[in-house]
Amino acid sequence: MNRIKEVVKQKGIKQNWLAEKLGKSYNMVNSYAQNRRQPSLEDLFKIAEILDVDIKDLIVSNKEH
Image (cartoon, rainbow, N blue to C red; front, side, top):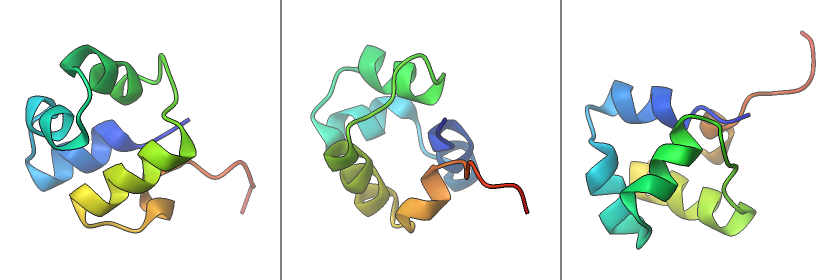
């Protein structure tokens, strides 16, 4: 699971803009945001860089606290 949708919303960024910067289609980025598909690790790093966040902010931990 990822938090791309939440981070994009917090930053006030449109998925269209992210798709353009990432070089992916809007549909692909929307699939990531809706957790229908998971980005590759390489794409996740690119998304974190584009959004200027730590990659950890984009993923949901599988560990219980």
